[in-house]
Length: 273
Ligand SMILES: [Zn+2]
Image (tube, rainbow, N blue to C red; front, side, top):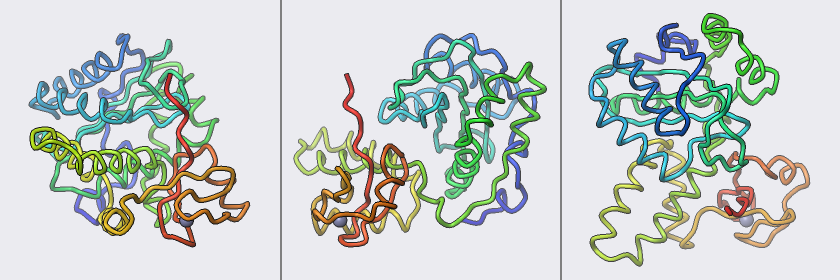
């Protein structure tokens, strides 16, 4: 987890120059938004291989939306783009459809490309961003900042201190997707397996080792690792959760662990239309 980059940086803007902030995205859809932000990074010379990065980010986006709800999306890719990390932030007044689970349009796009040699970097960034963005007043200030300078100033308030319990915050959708892929892999044809393996690898490199170890153990033992919570009952073992835990899980994208069966507890996903 500890890397050179993390020790040296404590604020989100340590990874961001004002020139990497776009106050008024012209993009009308998510691919255009990603491309617009990549162009900014190329211009700032922090990203070299735009085409490859764009493909990778769009592939990842299609696998599982990186919209975290409430008008924010974090498209990302773990690949070598020429440096340790490349970050760009774009705001859209009209909003862009990122197929968010809450159905809301995205007004703030934070794009992150980080080097595979820094495995913990994204979780570290993600935890800091999530902790800041969960507060409605912070989101509103970002959505309504009057210009690039003000937007950058607010982004400068985001601190990157990683707390233990936040390691698995806001990743329920990602873990659920991994399970979906692993279940499919068992029944897939050889050719399809290859593709599924690629998808699984893309998701795995975003998650902590300890979480993946638990996930694999559960998959091996039960054939599944992620359990929905329906009306306060863990669907993995049919045991009632405490009211406190249930209310924390309901509607959230955080991951909890069932005290009885040890499976990852998540809030059921709303059916897509
Ligand atoms: Zn359980």
